[in-house]
Amino acid sequence: MEGFHIQHQLEEIAGKEHVRLAEPMKQHTTFRIGGCAQYFIMPDSAEVIQKLVKFCRENEIPCFIMGNGSNLLVSDTGYEGVVIQLYKNFSRVKTDGTRLYAQAGALLSRVAVCALEHSLKGFEFAAGIPGTIGGAVVMNAGAYDGEMKQVVEQVTALNEQGEIVVLGKDELELGYRTSVLQSRSYIALEIVIELEHGEQEQIRTRMEELKERRTAKQPLEYPSAGSTFKRPEGNYAGKLIMESGFRGYQVGGARVSDKHCGFVINTGDATARDVIELTRHIQDKVQKDSGVMLELEIRKLGDFS
Image (tube, rainbow, N blue to C red; front, side, top):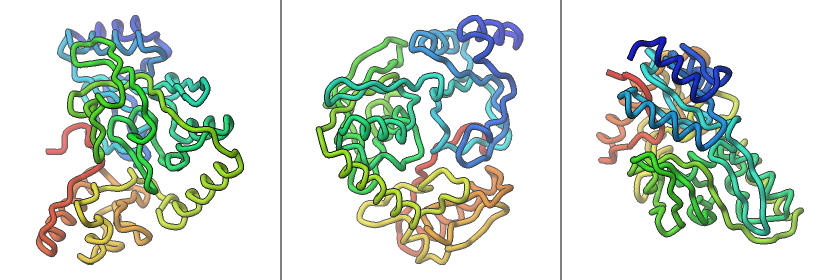
């Protein structure tokens, strides 16, 4: 199918105002790195998402689903295909008793504030994680002894056949940075979390405490994709990286944070190639020094050959 016809069909499905061409991906990732997406779409309903995915599959057009790009490294050459962003246009949040219903594009920080406003406790751990709730469930995000598996009750998702399905918490197979959504390439649409009634000031105090800890320990003043590597069993990636002498180590504009060695930061002009070269140096040296092969936690999109 020719480019003009693809563009026209995408605009018919999602609305012309929600479709962009040759969109710079550095504007849509917290790393602030990446070339252009051929087509970039910001849908506003589950029905539109379903139609877009079906169209791409039927026409064999590469398609990638993303949130706010907080865990994503896009290649310098960009992405030849359709990027569907579930973010601001798909981010409604509502409460019903102790249950909170959030569309996949809602930021975790916004969901946490909603919980606070309704005096619901149990979601404080997620307030400072810079991602969407959809992405957080897919990878079972967590911090400060909390993780999504502790609060998720139900997820409405789009399965591989393009059908909308509802999965209970026991069906999600939530493990360390993984889930059935990830292993089966399901697309999270709506998440239901179950919380408890609490004292609003205690919830606020806990959120502030975790915010201060995060600010003190993490290089939030620089663009990054959060923790670069997964935590190896029985150890910590940042500790191993520091012990291998990489604190402050730099390739091009990509640098191992002096504040927290588990973070690779963009000092201003880093390329995706810089980041990948740096992470490969780290993986090789850490494996040589400790016998541990660090696994990337950040997702890669595009051509890295």
